[in-house]
Image (cartoon, rainbow, N blue to C red; front, side):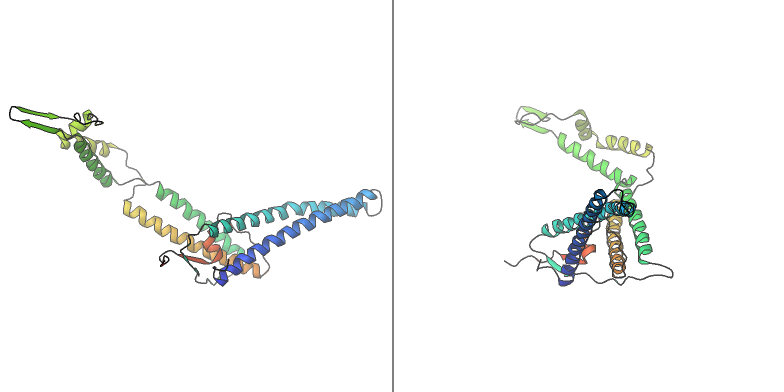
Amino acid sequence: MSELPSRVQSKVMALLDAEQRASTAMHMTQNAIREAQYAHDVNPNGDKAMPLAREIARLQAMQPDNQAQHRALADLNAKVRRYLDGLPAHVTLDDARSIRPKLGSGETHSKVVTRMRGEIVALIGERSRVERSTPTTEEVKALAARYVQSLAERATPRLIIEHDKFDMQFGRGMIGEKDPTPLQVLAWIDPTIVLNRLQAMIDARDKPASAMTAADRKKRLDEIKDELFELERIECAHIEAAMTEGTVIDQRPNVDIRALLGLVVSREKASAA
Protein backbone atom coordinates (compact mmCIF):
# COMPACT_ATOMS: atom_id res chain seq x y z
CA MET A 1 0.00 0.00 0.00
CA SER A 2 3.02 2.31 0.29
CA GLU A 3 2.93 3.18 -3.41
CA LEU A 4 -0.45 4.92 -2.98
CA PRO A 5 -0.53 8.69 -2.47
CA SER A 6 -0.93 9.53 1.21
CA ARG A 7 -4.45 10.95 0.86
CA VAL A 8 -5.63 7.92 -1.09
CA GLN A 9 -4.03 5.58 1.44
CA SER A 10 -5.87 7.42 4.24
CA LYS A 11 -9.17 6.83 2.45
CA VAL A 12 -8.40 3.14 2.01
CA MET A 13 -7.64 2.83 5.72
CA ALA A 14 -10.79 4.78 6.62
CA LEU A 15 -12.89 2.32 4.60
CA LEU A 16 -11.24 -0.61 6.36
CA ASP A 17 -11.87 1.04 9.72
CA ALA A 18 -15.52 1.56 8.83
CA GLU A 19 -15.84 -2.11 7.93
CA GLN A 20 -14.26 -3.09 11.25
CA ARG A 21 -16.62 -0.80 13.18
CA ALA A 22 -19.60 -2.30 11.36
CA SER A 23 -18.35 -5.79 12.19
CA THR A 24 -17.92 -4.84 15.85
CA ALA A 25 -21.42 -3.35 16.03
CA MET A 26 -22.88 -6.47 14.44
CA HIS A 27 -21.13 -8.84 16.84
CA MET A 28 -21.83 -6.69 19.90
CA THR A 29 -25.52 -6.64 19.04
CA GLN A 30 -25.52 -10.41 18.55
CA ASN A 31 -23.82 -10.87 21.95
CA ALA A 32 -26.33 -8.54 23.59
CA ILE A 33 -29.20 -10.54 22.08
CA ARG A 34 -27.65 -13.76 23.36
CA GLU A 35 -27.15 -12.38 26.89
CA ALA A 36 -30.66 -10.89 27.08
CA GLN A 37 -32.15 -14.11 25.76
CA TYR A 38 -30.25 -16.11 28.39
CA ALA A 39 -31.41 -13.78 31.19
CA HIS A 40 -35.00 -14.06 29.95
CA ASP A 41 -34.85 -17.83 29.73
CA VAL A 42 -33.45 -18.14 33.25
CA ASN A 43 -36.48 -16.37 34.73
CA PRO A 44 -39.24 -16.14 32.09
CA ASN A 45 -41.86 -15.11 34.62
CA GLY A 46 -39.83 -12.61 36.64
CA ASP A 47 -40.20 -8.85 36.87
CA LYS A 48 -37.57 -8.30 34.17
CA ALA A 49 -39.07 -10.75 31.69
CA MET A 50 -41.14 -8.17 29.77
CA PRO A 51 -38.36 -5.51 29.61
CA LEU A 52 -35.92 -8.19 28.45
CA ALA A 53 -38.35 -9.37 25.77
CA ARG A 54 -38.73 -5.79 24.52
CA GLU A 55 -34.94 -5.34 24.50
CA ILE A 56 -34.45 -8.58 22.57
CA ALA A 57 -37.02 -7.45 20.00
CA ARG A 58 -35.32 -4.04 19.68
CA LEU A 59 -31.88 -5.58 19.19
CA GLN A 60 -33.17 -8.15 16.71
CA ALA A 61 -34.78 -5.35 14.70
CA MET A 62 -31.41 -3.56 14.55
CA GLN A 63 -29.42 -6.58 13.43
CA PRO A 64 -30.50 -6.77 9.75
CA ASP A 65 -29.32 -3.17 9.24
CA ASN A 66 -26.04 -3.94 11.04
CA GLN A 67 -25.49 -6.99 8.85
CA ALA A 68 -26.36 -5.13 5.66
CA GLN A 69 -23.99 -2.28 6.57
CA HIS A 70 -21.14 -4.69 7.27
CA ARG A 71 -21.78 -6.69 4.10
CA ALA A 72 -21.87 -3.51 1.97
CA LEU A 73 -18.58 -2.24 3.41
CA ALA A 74 -16.92 -5.66 3.12
CA ASP A 75 -18.00 -5.91 -0.53
CA LEU A 76 -16.80 -2.36 -1.21
CA ASN A 77 -13.39 -2.99 0.36
CA ALA A 78 -13.06 -6.22 -1.61
CA LYS A 79 -13.79 -4.24 -4.78
CA VAL A 80 -11.14 -1.67 -3.80
CA ARG A 81 -8.57 -4.43 -3.23
CA ARG A 82 -9.36 -6.09 -6.57
CA TYR A 83 -9.03 -2.77 -8.37
CA LEU A 84 -5.72 -1.85 -6.76
CA ASP A 85 -4.31 -5.35 -7.18
CA GLY A 86 -5.29 -5.29 -10.85
CA LEU A 87 -3.47 -2.06 -11.70
CA PRO A 88 -0.56 -2.55 -14.12
CA ALA A 89 2.91 -2.41 -12.62
CA HIS A 90 4.04 0.61 -14.62
CA VAL A 91 1.48 3.31 -13.76
CA THR A 92 1.76 6.56 -11.89
CA LEU A 93 -0.68 7.08 -9.01
CA ASP A 94 -1.54 10.59 -7.85
CA ASP A 95 -4.11 12.36 -5.71
CA ALA A 96 -7.00 13.76 -7.72
CA ARG A 97 -7.91 17.44 -7.59
CA SER A 98 -9.89 18.05 -4.42
CA ILE A 99 -13.59 18.83 -4.71
CA ARG A 100 -15.12 21.20 -2.18
CA PRO A 101 -18.70 20.01 -1.61
CA LYS A 102 -21.10 22.94 -1.99
CA LEU A 103 -24.59 23.12 -0.53
CA GLY A 104 -27.34 25.25 -1.98
CA SER A 105 -30.00 27.00 0.06
CA GLY A 106 -31.87 24.44 2.15
CA GLU A 107 -29.75 21.58 0.87
CA THR A 108 -28.10 18.83 2.88
CA HIS A 109 -25.35 16.47 1.77
CA SER A 110 -27.94 13.68 1.63
CA LYS A 111 -30.13 15.72 -0.74
CA VAL A 112 -27.17 16.51 -2.99
CA VAL A 113 -26.16 12.84 -3.11
CA THR A 114 -29.73 11.89 -4.04
CA ARG A 115 -29.70 14.51 -6.80
CA MET A 116 -26.30 13.36 -8.06
CA ARG A 117 -27.49 9.78 -8.18
CA GLY A 118 -30.52 10.80 -10.20
CA GLU A 119 -28.24 12.53 -12.71
CA ILE A 120 -25.95 9.50 -12.79
CA VAL A 121 -28.87 7.19 -13.55
CA ALA A 122 -30.03 9.55 -16.32
CA LEU A 123 -26.55 9.63 -17.87
CA ILE A 124 -26.24 5.85 -17.73
CA GLY A 125 -29.59 5.63 -19.52
CA GLU A 126 -28.39 8.06 -22.18
CA ARG A 127 -25.17 6.08 -22.57
CA SER A 128 -27.20 2.92 -23.25
CA ARG A 129 -29.25 4.75 -25.89
CA VAL A 130 -26.14 6.14 -27.58
CA GLU A 131 -24.48 2.72 -27.55
CA ARG A 132 -27.57 1.25 -29.26
CA SER A 133 -27.74 4.01 -31.87
CA THR A 134 -27.63 3.00 -35.53
CA PRO A 135 -25.45 4.43 -38.34
CA THR A 136 -26.87 7.25 -40.45
CA THR A 137 -28.21 6.53 -43.93
CA GLU A 138 -25.10 8.08 -45.48
CA GLU A 139 -22.84 5.82 -43.44
CA VAL A 140 -24.90 2.74 -44.28
CA LYS A 141 -24.63 3.55 -47.98
CA ALA A 142 -20.87 3.95 -47.63
CA LEU A 143 -20.73 0.56 -45.90
CA ALA A 144 -22.77 -0.91 -48.74
CA ALA A 145 -20.33 0.50 -51.31
CA ARG A 146 -17.37 -1.06 -49.49
CA TYR A 147 -19.30 -4.32 -49.22
CA VAL A 148 -19.95 -4.46 -52.97
CA GLN A 149 -16.29 -3.65 -53.65
CA SER A 150 -15.19 -6.49 -51.38
CA LEU A 151 -17.59 -8.88 -53.15
CA ALA A 152 -16.12 -7.95 -56.51
CA GLU A 153 -12.55 -8.35 -55.25
CA ARG A 154 -13.29 -11.85 -53.93
CA ALA A 155 -14.74 -12.88 -57.31
CA THR A 156 -12.08 -11.44 -59.62
CA PRO A 157 -11.12 -14.30 -61.97
CA ARG A 158 -7.71 -15.27 -63.25
CA LEU A 159 -7.00 -15.02 -66.94
CA ILE A 160 -5.33 -17.96 -68.65
CA ILE A 161 -3.60 -16.75 -71.78
CA GLU A 162 -1.49 -18.97 -74.02
CA HIS A 163 -0.64 -18.92 -77.74
CA ASP A 164 -3.66 -21.00 -78.58
CA LYS A 165 -5.75 -20.60 -75.47
CA PHE A 166 -7.70 -17.89 -73.66
CA ASP A 167 -9.70 -18.71 -70.57
CA MET A 168 -10.55 -17.39 -67.14
CA GLN A 169 -11.19 -19.18 -63.89
CA PHE A 170 -13.26 -18.16 -60.90
CA GLY A 171 -11.81 -19.58 -57.73
CA ARG A 172 -10.64 -22.93 -59.07
CA GLY A 173 -7.05 -23.74 -59.72
CA MET A 174 -5.54 -23.27 -56.27
CA ILE A 175 -5.79 -25.71 -53.37
CA GLY A 176 -8.31 -24.57 -50.78
CA GLU A 177 -9.71 -21.77 -52.92
CA LYS A 178 -13.52 -21.68 -53.04
CA ASP A 179 -15.71 -20.92 -56.01
CA PRO A 180 -17.28 -17.45 -55.80
CA THR A 181 -20.95 -17.06 -54.96
CA PRO A 182 -23.37 -15.80 -57.61
CA LEU A 183 -23.58 -12.47 -55.78
CA GLN A 184 -19.79 -12.09 -55.88
CA VAL A 185 -19.71 -12.81 -59.60
CA LEU A 186 -22.54 -10.32 -60.20
CA ALA A 187 -20.70 -7.66 -58.20
CA TRP A 188 -17.63 -8.25 -60.36
CA ILE A 189 -19.62 -8.07 -63.59
CA ASP A 190 -21.69 -4.98 -62.69
CA PRO A 191 -21.02 -3.50 -59.24
CA THR A 192 -23.18 -0.46 -60.04
CA ILE A 193 -26.39 -2.43 -60.42
CA VAL A 194 -25.73 -4.33 -57.18
CA LEU A 195 -24.97 -1.12 -55.29
CA ASN A 196 -28.02 0.66 -56.71
CA ARG A 197 -30.30 -2.15 -55.56
CA LEU A 198 -28.75 -2.12 -52.11
CA GLN A 199 -29.12 1.65 -51.84
CA ALA A 200 -32.77 1.38 -52.87
CA MET A 201 -33.31 -1.14 -50.08
CA ILE A 202 -31.59 1.22 -47.63
CA ASP A 203 -33.81 4.13 -48.69
CA ALA A 204 -36.94 1.97 -48.32
CA ARG A 205 -36.21 1.19 -44.66
CA ASP A 206 -38.02 2.94 -41.84
CA LYS A 207 -35.79 5.78 -40.75
CA PRO A 208 -34.34 4.96 -37.30
CA ALA A 209 -34.93 7.62 -34.66
CA SER A 210 -31.59 6.97 -32.97
CA ALA A 211 -29.24 7.34 -35.94
CA MET A 212 -25.84 8.91 -35.20
CA THR A 213 -22.65 9.24 -37.14
CA ALA A 214 -19.75 7.18 -35.81
CA ALA A 215 -17.90 10.38 -34.94
CA ASP A 216 -20.85 11.86 -33.04
CA ARG A 217 -21.44 8.55 -31.24
CA LYS A 218 -17.83 8.34 -30.08
CA LYS A 219 -17.78 12.02 -29.08
CA ARG A 220 -20.93 11.72 -26.97
CA LEU A 221 -19.78 8.49 -25.31
CA ASP A 222 -16.50 10.18 -24.37
CA GLU A 223 -18.42 13.16 -22.98
CA ILE A 224 -20.72 10.93 -20.95
CA LYS A 225 -17.75 9.05 -19.54
CA ASP A 226 -16.20 12.31 -18.31
CA GLU A 227 -19.52 13.66 -17.01
CA LEU A 228 -20.26 10.46 -15.11
CA PHE A 229 -16.84 10.46 -13.47
CA GLU A 230 -17.23 14.08 -12.37
CA LEU A 231 -20.69 13.41 -10.93
CA GLU A 232 -19.32 10.42 -9.02
CA ARG A 233 -16.49 12.53 -7.62
CA ILE A 234 -19.00 15.14 -6.40
CA GLU A 235 -21.18 12.39 -4.94
CA CYS A 236 -18.24 10.88 -3.04
CA ALA A 237 -17.15 14.31 -1.77
CA HIS A 238 -20.60 14.91 -0.27
CA ILE A 239 -20.70 11.43 1.29
CA GLU A 240 -17.35 12.13 2.90
CA ALA A 241 -18.48 15.56 4.11
CA ALA A 242 -21.67 14.07 5.55
CA MET A 243 -19.64 11.50 7.45
CA THR A 244 -17.63 14.25 9.17
CA GLU A 245 -20.96 15.66 10.38
CA GLY A 246 -22.09 12.29 11.72
CA THR A 247 -24.37 11.30 8.83
CA VAL A 248 -23.68 7.95 7.20
CA ILE A 249 -24.59 7.64 3.50
CA ASP A 250 -23.93 4.28 1.91
CA GLN A 251 -21.73 4.22 -1.17
CA ARG A 252 -23.23 2.83 -4.35
CA PRO A 253 -22.02 -0.75 -4.94
CA ASN A 254 -20.87 0.15 -8.48
CA VAL A 255 -19.09 3.38 -7.56
CA ASP A 256 -15.97 4.10 -9.62
CA ILE A 257 -13.05 3.23 -7.33
CA ARG A 258 -11.01 6.17 -8.66
CA ALA A 259 -13.78 8.57 -7.65
CA LEU A 260 -14.17 6.86 -4.28
CA LEU A 261 -10.47 7.12 -3.43
CA GLY A 262 -9.69 10.40 -5.21
CA LEU A 263 -7.13 8.55 -7.34
CA VAL A 264 -5.59 9.53 -10.67
CA VAL A 265 -4.05 6.67 -12.65
CA SER A 266 -1.61 7.78 -15.36
CA ARG A 267 -0.49 5.23 -17.95
CA GLU A 268 1.64 7.48 -20.12
CA LYS A 269 4.94 6.64 -18.48
CA ALA A 270 6.33 3.15 -18.62
CA SER A 271 9.37 1.96 -16.77
CA ALA A 272 12.60 3.06 -18.44
CA ALA A 273 14.04 -0.38 -17.73
